[in-house]
Image (cartoon, rainbow, N blue to C red; front, side):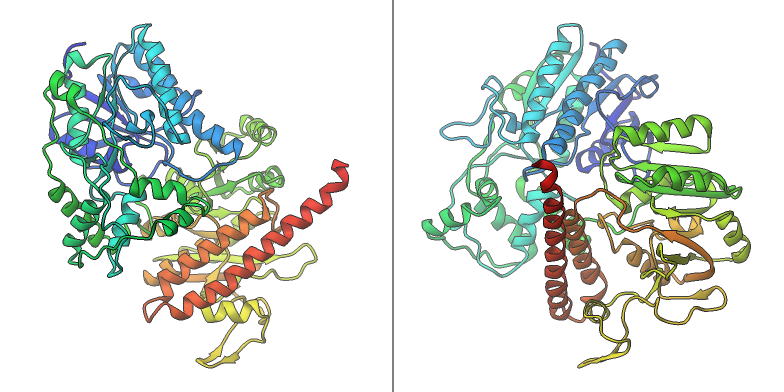
Amino acid sequence: MPAVGSGAKILVTGASGFIGAALCRRLVAEGFDVVGATRRPFGTLPEGVRRAWVPGVGGATDWTGHLDGVDAVVHLAAPAHITCRLPTATAESFRRAIVDGTEALGRAVAARGLRLVFISTAKVHGERTTDRPFVEDDPLAPGDLYAQSKAEAERRLARLAEQGLDHVVLRPPLVYGPGAKGNLRSLVRLCDSDLPLPFATLRNRRSLIYLDSLADAILTALRAPRAGGRTYLVADENAYSTRELAAGIRRRLGRAERFFTPPRPLVALVSLLPGMAVRASRLFASLAVDTTRIRGELDWRARATLDDGLARMVDGYRAAGGSPEADGVVFDQRPDEDGVSVVVVSYRNAELPAVLQAAQRDPAIIEIIVVDNGNDDRLLARIEAMRAADPRLRLISGHGNVGFATGCNIGAAVARGRHLLLLNPDCHLGPDSVTQLTHQLGDRPGLWVCGVRLINSDGSEQRGARRNIGTPSQWLVEALHFDDHFVLPLGRVQRVNLHHQPLPDAITEVPAISGAFMFMPRRSYEAVGGMDPRYFLHFEDLDFCQKIGGGGGRVLFCPNIVLLHEKSQSRASPLFVERHKCRSMRLYFRKYFSRGGAIVPNAVWAVLGSGLLLRGLMRRLREGAARWPERG
């Protein structure tokens, strides 16, 4: 293959990720025409990078249109590197995304005669080294699901190479730099304290590679004709012990380098705890690689020093306030169209077809966007049939179960309407409900979001349709079912939900509304960054109302529009739901109520969280007991 020179068009999958964004910036700086493939239609891409939205990377992904005019491809996209044990179905989906997705892209690239640079992992050789570092010709012995999937993807590409695919495989170890997540972020947080760390006598050797050095290695693989068909381990010049890493991080943080030697029995005992054996291995074991091949064949060397790389990583950590995760996303700007775009995020909701049919009957609605977070094939087939009969219906699939907040962001990112309605898949619209609400609200200026009166099947007003912002004290009073205005030591406290209070006569301002029905100008949603993607399930609606109010906007409640909301229609496990509710509550409390100290929020969360988990467990046991006669 001829060298890929400046001005060439490069497609980068996973362009919005930690490595992808750094690579895109480097390619643009080198004069390349860069197209970034992302699985979500929103988020910031580096300046000069054009987006190609690919909702799901898998065996069925059609790359045809995305490869037009492209000269080479860098394949980074993969599910997040997980360390916990996954359910069988989830693990298989994870594997297919990496293995089948890589093979499908490889076939498309081979058909065009392009070069593919595939980013694998040094862990395809195993989880640890002993007497010598790994070299490229060592046998593959992947330990976890991520490494196993990468190894199998390498094998698939090797078979395609026999049919003419020009590809290069790079196997990096742990990548560090600004915005690093996972184990490195955990280590930085651990070092950002005065606690002594158990690394005093640790002499393990772990290879790493700085983010910009990996981008440089990828650029070298694109440009070098002789790299075709070759596999390279890439890393910094030296390997380091965990103690050296922690010391370097603490120096940059201005913390004392305090270490101790833990007793061997204590280490052994901790390693027996669920999930701790893997974490202990990554802290205490060695994993070193030999980069002789790429240095000799391509004259490539990592030029960043560990001190410089750690300094930039720690500075990025500090700039983000200790957390690199943002509470919102950036949406691409696009023109408004008159009418309402409805976004429905669904995960195994049997009521979905009926909800969609009701929405189709409202003339104010110009499109209905269904974000498929994991519906079964029969339900998807029904939606496809409805979509064939009504072009207003759109289906976004392939991204897996990304949670409610991110699902809303995905739908909102492609919405065209001037107004946006977030609608639960078990919330039934009445005749012309959206049309009537649009008329009642009129052309209101500024930031605002509006909810409506939600009712149960018996006609009673549902909890949560109008409510307070949900302080820890309010949630405690709500959970204990105390009367409104209960007096705690800190003063009089209201309950969270306001359904027991008299209904207003007209549209009125309230502290918060339910995420089951949220109607607003699309510009309001985009102005506050949409839903906070850190919430997987629950509390994202309260958080969104906080962001609207914090931005000078208004949260409204319309009592004259009445809708039936059938709660808990999803077939998700009760324990799964309560666990995520518990996590979301903790995030919400930390985000808004920890400024004066975290003792009270943490204490309330501990009490309520324990109750949520217990409730989920009991529901799960009752479901199992109910199914037991069927098994007999």
